[in-house]
Amino acid sequence: MGELIPLFPLGTPLFPGVVLPLHVFEPRYRRLVHDLLALSEEDERRFFGVVAIRQGWEVERVAPAEALYDIGCTARLQLVRPQPDGGFRVVTVGGDRFRLRDVVVGEDPPYLQGEVEWLADEEAAEEAAGDAEGTVHPGSGHGPAGNGTPPCDEALDEVVASVAHDSLALLAAGVEELFTDYVAEVAELGAGTGGEDAERAALLAAVADDPAALSWLVASAALLTTEDRQALLAESATRRRLAAETRLLRRELALLRELGAVPVPLQRFATPMTVN
Image (cartoon, rainbow, N blue to C red; front, side, top):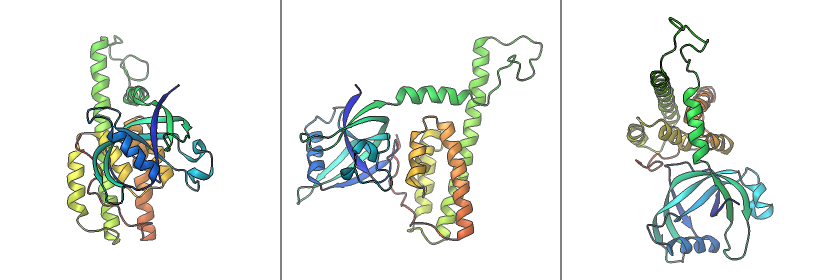
């Protein structure tokens, strides 16, 4: 059995580090907020799981497990403001990724719950595997071995780590440049709301030294389909996520320049990320 957590289905996925404001008005989700508020502020379980609804499905009309994507992200409660009508205005921040194994529907509590497994271990393993991609171990037979004597394990590890770090930094820099061009292209087409340049610059500066945070910023802010966003959320390795975003941004830039139009107004960049 996996861990059981409350679920909040939405039309688009949530990403780690991304700020998600919500207006909670349905009775079952009002109950969810009440249940979370009953926990102390220090309690690590003051969160719910956000899972995206598959395009064309309605959760209430089909089996919930079929209506929802299987990879989600926790939303940690940061701020709650009760409303006169009994609802809530809440601010949450994306936390940990999880895989949805099953959905539990019941009368008490009235909201959906999910049996989940956490992806932290998988993410760590994928990051380690991703860091090794594209590197050549001296003496491995895949490159010049010098005098034929491989260096000691410690020195070899340092070489591999240095190459991996530098290549990841180059990949992140390429995504940042593409994303900057992409947002500028959208703004030029008149889909901006004003002030995006300063906001984008501040956000990019905040994540400049954090390739993972950069990848989540791009995933949340670019005008992508739910399927594209979900694929990025499901990718555990930052290196492969950035590589996928490189392809997606190049595709979107080509479409913008060819069609001269964007599908929907550019999302505001006011609060998509935290500085953590």
